[in-house]
Amino acid sequence: MLIAEPLQRAIDELSKLPSIGRKTALRLALYLLKSEKADVELFVKSLIELKEKIKFCSICSNITVDEICDVCKSRKRDRSIICIVEEASDIIAIERTNEYNGLYHVLGGVLSPLSGKDADSLNIHKLIERVENSEVKEILVALNPDTEGETTTLYLAKLLKPFGIRISRIARGLPIGGDLEFADEATIGRAVLGRVDL
Amino acid sequence: MLIAEPLQRAIDELSKLPSIGRKTALRLALYLLKSEKADVELFVKSLIELKEKIKFCSICSNITVDEICDVCKSRKRDRSIICIVEEASDIIAIERTNEYNGLYHVLGGVLSPLSGKDADSLNIHKLIERVENSEVKEILVALNPDTEGETTTLYLAKLLKPFGIRISRIARGLPIGGDLEFADEATIGRAVLGRVDL
Image (cartoon, rainbow over all chains, first blue to last red):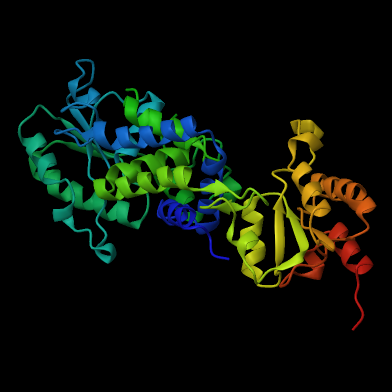
């Protein structure tokens, strides 16, 4: 017995999503199959509207429903600091902390020669424009603490140095609630090097 | 900053899916946002067609695009044995083994007083009709080997006993590729009790 064709197609499409394998895709498809028709219509509508209504901010490439995003529009934000992140989802993560009140800039990736991501494919050109034409005093680089993130951070630091502004990056160290005993050497090493006075 | 409303709605809808939490839902939504419009349209279309085209077989409640499913229609299947499964997805799993050539019957759940599933809410009435009105000689119960599955298996065995047909259930024992050392006591116990002659 073959799987009925519409079900097979739904499984194929669902398993294209990141972190969804074929077994999970089958489970999701059967869940939708058993759901009320109205619920599935709501589900599908939300995805269509996601694609139709969401744009990317023309200044920082953050997610927005307008031409310019809420952060870039806001008069309450500190316009002298720009935080560089890899993806728009990182902005959501940083905003949740309530510890940052500056602007953002979404790179759209990190330097990764193996997957063909070079400086030209990143949103760097617009960043330089912003630094040149505004009152920016500090660039805070908030990329993931892995090889690609580190490489990109160093690349950006070198690139932005001539502008004579402060260039910082988010601290590396032990995560809150972490355990010294189980942390890896690299993290403990960074935590020791980055020690702060009490 | 709040998350843009269409994105928030897509996250809400995606996180209703089983095994999808809010963080995964955000990741999936951002993935769809970055995908080509045509790809998202294909994705959405597959879900709409899944809901519109797939029906449940009027005999066994298997998934089908017609009134009656491929298994019930087929002339090559052994009509003297019916395998009882909890969900239509279990049929797919059993069909993949190529070890079973009989018919199926989807119960649509198992007895579970805690979640309000009693015998009336299961697809049992139609099963009795099938046993009464056809040449069925054996019922093979293939429910999950957990408390609810066991309870339901015993319930069905008692219910079907008056018909004087053979009632069997799939074997419990060590899974192929499993390790005796790491198997739990219940599984090893069943494997010993269910030993077969060589």
